[in-house]
Amino acid sequence: MKRAFLLSLIITTFLIGIGEAYASGQLYSGVRGVTSSFKIAVGGTKLDLERDPVLINGRTVVPARTVFSKINADVEWNVIKNRLVITKDNNAIVMYIGYNNCYVNGAKKEMEAPAILVNGTVMVPIRFVAETFNMKVGWNEANSTVYLGDIPETIIEDENNSSNVKGRSVVIDAGHGGAQTGAVYGRVKEKDLNIDIAKRLNTKLSEIGVITYMTRDDDYNVSLYSRSGLANKKGADLLISIHNNAGLKRYSGSMSLYYPSSSKTKGKLSSYEFASIVQKNMCNTLGSKDMGIIARSELAVLRTSHIPAVIAEVGYMSNSSELSKLKTSEYREKAAESLKKAVIESLQLMYE
Image 1: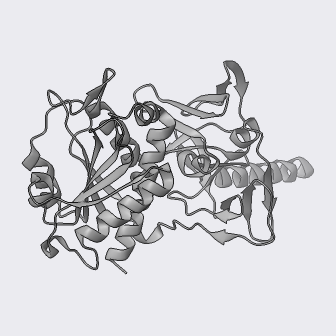
Image 2: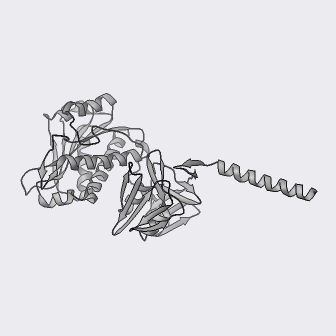
Image 3: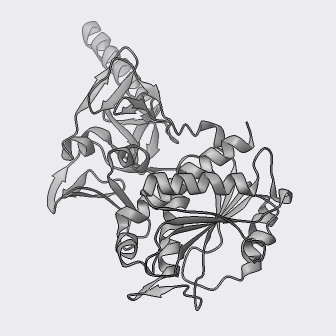
C-alpha cells in the first residue's frame, strides 16, 4: 500500500512537471511552441530576423520571406485564403497556417511542424522547406546556428543588417490607381505593376520592423496631394513613390526623381541622397541601365512633401524587353527587394 502510494506520488509529480513545461510555451496559430535564440545563417551569412525562431515539436520555425528569399525562392502569402506558396525553380510548396499537411508539387505531404503566423510574419519549418528545395541543412552546437548551405568556418553578419531601423516609418505610394491607369502597353497597366511592387515592399519592410503606411492598397483613385499629405500627417521618415516609365522604345533602365531643395532634408539624409541610394540599389539588384537621378521641382508628390521623397521609376514599359521582365513575379520581387535595401540604407544614413 505504501509502495503504491509512493509510485502514485512520483507519477503525479512527473505529470505536473510535464504540464508546467508544456504551459511554459505559448500558442502560435493554435499550436504550442517556445521562442528560441537560435541564429540562422544562409551561405555563411547570419541573418537579422524580424522575429525570433520558434520551436514546435523540436522543429525550428523561421520567417519565411526573410530566410528563403536568400536562396531566391518566391514567397507569396494570401491572408484571405490563409495560404502560403513558396516556389523555387520547378518546385512549389503550398501551406496553410496552423496545419501540418501541405502540398509539394501537388502531392500531399506532412510536416513535423506547421506554418504559423507571428505578429503578421509568416513562419515555416526551416528543415522541411530547405530539404524540399534540395538545400543542405546543418547545425552548429557551439554557436547555436542553423545553416542553409555549406557550414563555413566562420559566419559574417547580414550586409543589410536592419536591426537599427526598427520603429522608423515609411510611406509607400503606389503611383496612379483607379481611373488613372498610368502607362498602358500590351494590356499591361502601370497602376497594376506599381501596386504589386508596393505591396511586396510593404511586406518586406513590415517584416523587419519598419512602420509602413500605404497611400493605396488596392485599385482606387488617390489625389496627388493626399499622397504627400499622408507622409506629412504621419510624420514619416521617408516617402517612396513607385512608378514605371514610358518613352521611346529604345529607352530602358531605372530612374529616380527628387525635389532639388535642402528643405526636404531629415537628419543626415537629403532627397538627393535618398534618390542616389534608391537609384544605386535598383540598378545593382535589377541589373538595369542607369537612366539617372533627375531633379523635378514641379511634381506635386515631391514638392509638397516635408521629408526626403523619391519617385522610383523601376523600368520602361515602352521597351518590349523590359516590359517582359516587369510582367514576371520574379522581377517585381527583385524590384521590391532593391527598394527595401534602399530604404534600410537611407534610414541608417539618416540616423547615424
